Image (cartoon, rainbow, N blue to C red; front, side, top):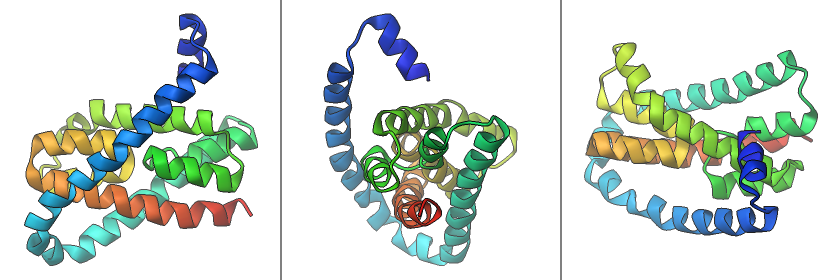
Amino acid sequence: MAIILILLVSHISYQNYQIAKDIMSYFLGPATVALAIPLYKNRTMMLKYLTPILFGMIVGSTVTISSAVILAKLLHLSQHVLAALTIKSITVPVASEVAKNIGANQVLVAGFVMITGMFGAMFGLKLLSLLNIHHPISRGLALGTISHGIGTGEAVKEGEIQGAISGVAMAFTAVLTSFIIPWFFR
């Protein structure tokens, strides 16, 4: 809704917005691949914490999907908005493909994905600190699972471990969600 409002106020056409969105999506791919370096360097530590990492990603993905469904039902939102909300926590290129599979509006999906990422990047680390969560794996896991690429960018700024875990969480969440969501919309 915020993206639509900004486009209307700024007199930006959908076609111009689509071009900019496509350019941004194109550059997200190489940025994601660049996260492989810290991942490789920290692979031993990640294997040590593999069970809690997997558990955290599964629970985080489930909670973000469930919270979107509950919010949509409580607010009596349409099926189109519900579909777009359920994939808000996966990276734009994957979210676009999932949106096609479930019949969600891709522009709405892109808007929700960007807003979710921005909120996670702006407030995620502050909220984790406020909740006294300081372990680098926990912090990276939370940002990558919930706020995908933009949150992972913040995690990388905080530290190499946080960035590596966040990158893994972002990728795993995208794969997991891309399998779960279409099942719900059959």
